[in-house]
Image (cartoon, rainbow over all chains, first blue to last red; front, side, top):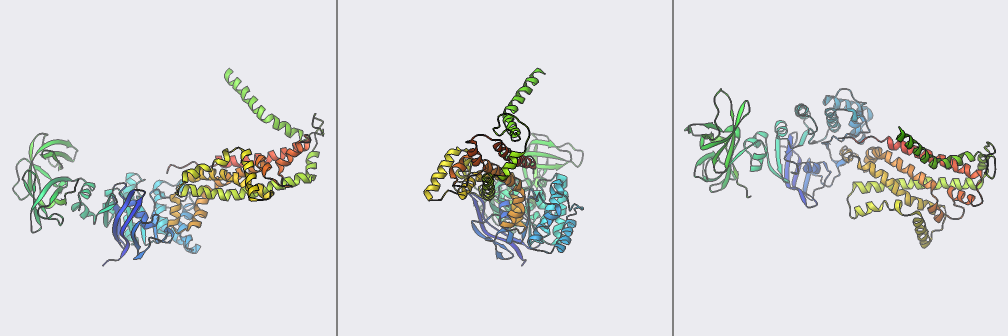
Length: 363
Length: 261
């Protein structure tokens, strides 16, 4: 049993009439890189602020290191935050910014000096101790903000969209940097982001949030390969959905039928018993097009090409398998062959293991 | 060319109208003629006489006492009010926020009479303390408004960051909020001091025997004729006010431009 460092148990937070966080339960393990991923307004930042202590939950319990902390003010919690806007103190220089937390806990000045320079070395910031933070570039400010939080050796480091203000190249560098820091220090990182690539590439586990609720908590690969809900499948990458009904479940493989009676095979899912209405989700890159029907045990659907977009290494096709049911697929342009033309009749194929069965959502 | 010449003359006339009386007054404080009718030559005797006038000195002392105490109290109260109005959400906030402006728009006579009636009703004997209380009452608004403007431009996440780093409410205020709003606090205090030292109407209504401030004293001196001594004391007052406003202006223009982040 791994040690839990942050726990949210049935936590609800309302602002006026809006429920920002709705009965959320989360368990974050010591030393892991954990991400809260979701669209804006999904409650991920509020969840983070609840852990930091900037908000009080209306219901539920928040535990740090096993102890309930929901009534503790932020300055009594051993967590530190890197803010989206960095929130560096503009009237203090870099050194005083980083030393701020240590001074509050009455660390001797000599020790402060060593720890501040260590922290700044850690974030690879050249000697800028005496600089005003307002004279720094965005990337440098971000590093100071990181150093200012990490120097206190928190139990948990909370990061609130720390990279959203950086340009794309810097953002990629910073991502690697964050991952390295987390590995080196072994501190639990909780990252809030709306950028799926950021979450998937940095994290040990990701919680996908939507409308105040947690949709799925899993390793990045599982989030992409085995999404638990239609929302997760749709939010992470792109996904195709085919409405179907489960006909049979046999040895981990389920047979589903589409409205027009075509039957397809997919890995079984707990929430998709026999008779259940489901949606079969397949990623565009797992589909391939042929002119002849396949016979090697793959799923096969007759389809008509509606649109094709040449994009260099790949061509994206939109195909229609039934009235109003359209799927997209991307085909590698490996050989110099003519692609398929709009209006052409084709067969759409994929391996049974490439599909995911999702419970159909009431609309 | 012609238009700019007309504009120049017009501008010069406006400034002449505004400042000529003041300059003449200052100039005549150095006049030897005790009736101050015609220029009879340069002297500093009126300033020397001021130094010996115990009435003036007492009034000056009163003015300074009222000004400093009222400024101090109003600055603390006004800053607290500004913090409450910007940092917290509570019932009637909009109404209270608007009411802060009231002392600035209520005619001074009305404010004076109402304060007098109020003080009489609660049986507070008119004295220096009643003047101080009255001055605090109208000075608080000015501080609240200048400090609130600074707070509005301040990123509240800075305070959260301080708390996050282990600073309790007092440390957060002392180390983060106050340094950020200090220009506003000082501007407000200077404004208070200027207004308090200059105030006549409210002071007139709330003064007790022997608690008259400098403006009150000048007024009673004028009743027996304008002597160069009055010019001298007015000139000194003017200098004080001007220097306060100069510092205030400096602080105002010295404000950091708000940053994009």
